[in-house]
Length: 325
Image 1 (tube, one colour):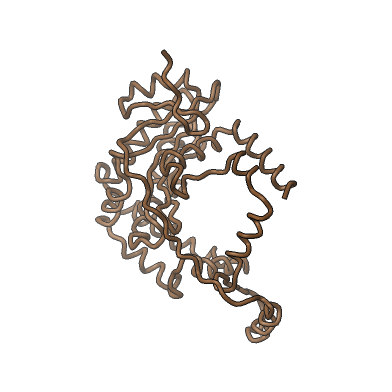
Image 2: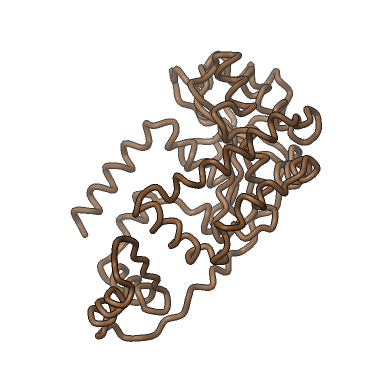
């Protein structure tokens, strides 16, 4: 325990100098706060507080048969595998229910705000724009998948094409939905050349407006987005590890056994109206959290001049920095 604790403490110290690690931590804090599970981050204090009794108690509570799923993939005989596991786990005391995952709702929405974390002399700014999103069981999952693929999932996505390929502000940007059992986050962003932070943010906001109707999806975009998602499906089953992961994922996410058989048809069934609808529903332009980690001396005034949103200064822990007199 002490060896692993020491490793984690070193990693946490190193993370304080890594803009992406800072951005991830502050983003979680801003979106969810300290009381929601998705807003709780590992700190030196929480790492030092863990005892061996805590670890044993957690294992005793969660590593139980009622919570377990065993997936076996390979050139095997099912009956022999079943017999082998029944013998190996014969002494594992039965019991334990599947966890309920009763997450509290995400904190109430806030008007769009830029949260700026100073990283002096940073050559790049890390931009992370988002808000709490839907859980994995949302009926809009397939429509969201296609919409986000066009917006920021593909290499040829609207965001990456404009900000990387056309403008040259970044080596790569994108967007995604975190899902999970609770309200996982929507996020869009990437690493941006410092002096282009304001310009890139304007481009991000324009593209987010675009998917809501300002720049309608074209037939070619929709076709490419759908085909990419469908054609990527076989890769999930290209190895025994991939097959095991796909099958285990059905159990973990409470998906139907027919999920993969129906996947392509459900992607194909997504309409242009569906895409615009989910963009408006899950990307609320009036309540975005814009977290930017970068050289404040270089980027603050240009960001202020964009007029996109008021600026709040935070430290690397996500705490508000008092205004300078």
